[in-house]
Image 1 (cartoon, rainbow, N blue to C red):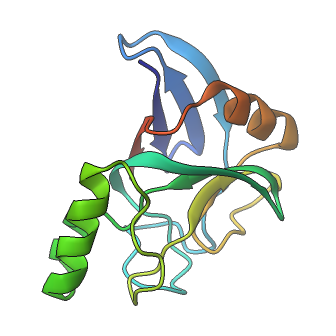
Image 2: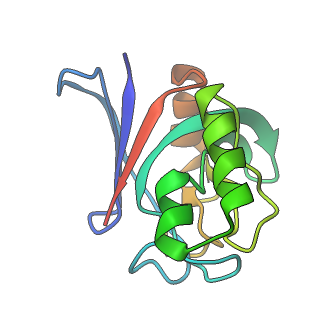
Length: 148
């Protein structure tokens, strides 16, 4: 089973086979304010934690993989409303994307657009060829771990 590891400090994305064997690795760019976990919509931070790929689409920055931010831990850490927590738990149990309209933010993607500098609103950006390769390789439900 494939897994995605994102190391923010190293600016590196690695796909493993789940047994610690690297399948694919590439450089990344992050949100404009990359240090620390995402806390709210518009903070320019890239989340940190355990997520899964909840959506695949082609968007403004080419092939895009939706990351299931916010997760249960994000909601608890930030003290968000109990109804949001219930909704996220329910959707995660079905492998669905969380609600993306809350004050915590959402719509975090792994997409193209380039890696020359940290420029996104919180997404993980790759080079165009790397974004296409990742899109072709990764199925929905793939585990994503984002480290500081």
